[in-house]
Image (tube, helix red, strand yellow):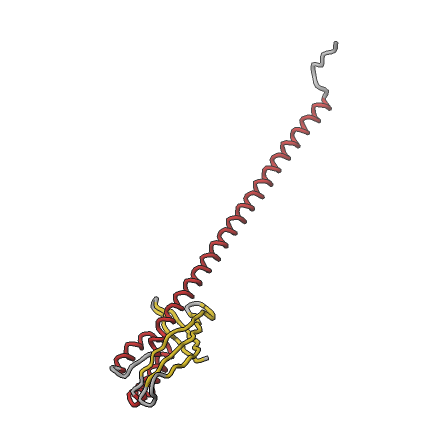
Length: 186
């Protein structure tokens, strides 16, 4: 029986160098896998952040659209409805519902045309929203389309005259409140 008491030199170097290369390969492999995992985690975190931003933005735009639409549905009939009794005070209260250049235009129209005509013909008009929808939303401005039914009584006409119309309304957020910044018949 032959007992091998030493490992041949060439065989020993082979095992050592194989062990060293395997160790180096393992360290490299661990570093590569760690880098890939870190990159994947960063990509997942970035994707989650992006999805959170998009979801939050979509919710805030939807909320903005709902609030502006509700304000338009409430405010536009108020602007378009009036009675001769206390008409100046009635319109003075309505000026707070409008903003921007439209506020000046609306004040001039009411003072120069609507109030004198209403007094002369004993006009009374009541507007109601039949249907409404948001056309567009951009920043703090929302454009709304309203279908309005308006009933008018006057000295000139026996009974009530009914009219239907469409108006495009621009709503702008001013100081946390939605105000009418434009009203155009369509």
